[in-house]
Amino acid sequence: LAADYPVILGGAALTRAYVEQDLHEIYEGEVRYARDAFEGLRLMDALVGIKRGVPGAVLPELRGRRHARVEVVSEPDTGPVRSDVAVDNPVPVPPFWGTRVVRGVQLRDYASWLDEDALFKGQWGLKPGRNAGGPGYQELVETEGRPRLRALLERVQTERLLDAGVVYGYFPCVSKGDDLVILDEHGGERMRFTFPRQGRGRRLCLADFFRPVESGETDVVGLQVVTMGSRVSEAANELFAADAYRDYLELHGLSVQLAEALAEFWHARVRSELGFSGEDPQDVKDMFALKYRGARFSLGYGACPDLADRAKIAELLEPERIGVVLSEEYQLHPEQSTDAIVVHHPDAVYFNIGGRP
Picture 1 (cartoon, one colour):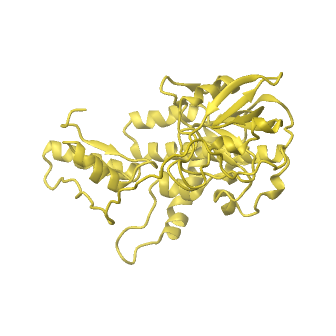
Picture 2 (cartoon, one colour):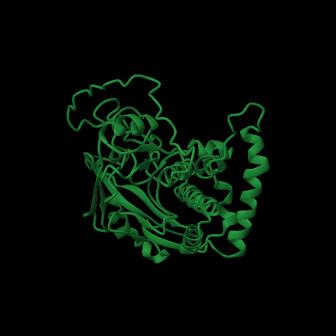
Picture 3 (tube, one colour):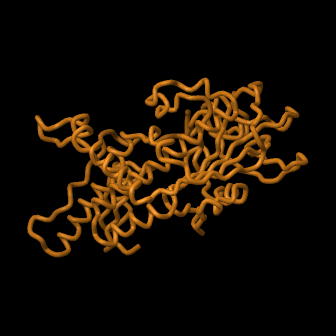
């Protein structure tokens, strides 16, 4: 990448210090961090203003580290030592083996799973100003966030922009070291996923949440792909092409969070079908805080970082039946779609490979 091109980076995997300090040191051009899409737009406005010679157009100052960088010395990897995850938990019996397709899921069924804070803060950039005496976050939620949300939800329903669909299934499996082995109807190997293991701490690996092959027992793993369909994606792209960026960001952000809401709703459906939804908390905030049994692991994150595994999930679930296809870069299209490996084990937690959960 030529140094005369400015670079704006963001996302959950990056921090401002890493972008504006570490990456800035190794790139000769401008490198800036954008916490959300709105900060990205402000940076773009500043860059365009500078290029056009607009008086007063400047980029914000790079922010220094609040804390000195500490060099971490990793403990030596002592080999594939299994974690302390229990192997005597009951294995639930699924209602069926294989896959099922569900089309036309109604918004009213999964709307209550919409995480408003993730939408308002993360997608829409709703936050109080820095001036003292201004409205706080909760006031902004009531005066701006929820009214805009209600209007947008009414629009997507009136214009029939949502075509929510799910393909999911249950598969027999065992674990073998760091591998999750999907079995065929005869007990032979059908497919294999290999996951990384922590080099220290509990030495967790996603495969540990399933019965080891040495036990002689067969476990069950759930897989799911959900989507909002292509119409809302097309509508968002039309807004972007028309330079209606605020409207684009709001519709796009809502559709992405609705996909997450549908994924959480269907995960709850899986817990119900496996017979332990009675352990779910009653407060939806506790649900958003993941205080339920099991976990839904999305590809590309700490425990299962290899996006190429999406091709294996696609082979098993055939998500094209709900209009979802996989690109050569292992991205789901339409964008408002998400896939997951659903784990029933009561010890299942989210964790990073570099350390403790």
